[in-house]
Length: 79
Image 1 (cartoon, rainbow, N blue to C red):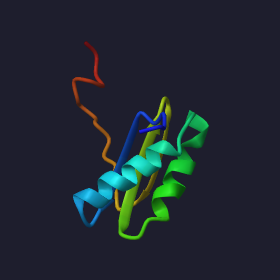
Image 2: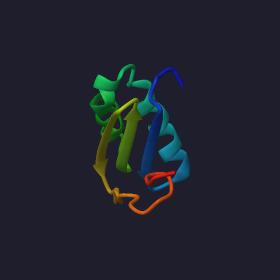
Image 3: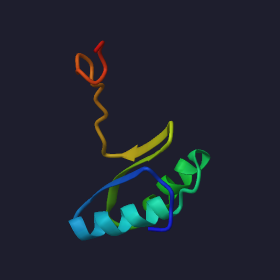
Image 4: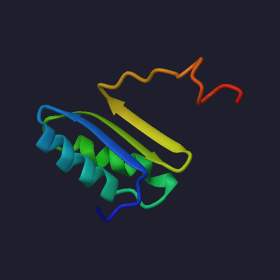
C-alpha cells in the first residue's frame, strides 16, 4: 500500500474484490483531508457495496455500513 490511511474497509461481493478495493481506497488517502478521495476511488469499482476510510481524526463512510456507537463499553467509560 502506498497510501497513508489508518484504515480502509470495503464491503464487496468477494473477499478478493474487497481487498483490492480497500488497497485502492487507502492508496488515494495521503492526509486526513483526503478521506473522501478514498471513498471516491472505491466507489468507481464495480461490485463495491460499501467503504469506510479512517485517517487520524477523520472518517468517511459510503454505502452498506451500519455504524453503531460503543456506549457502555470499557473503552469509552471511566477507568
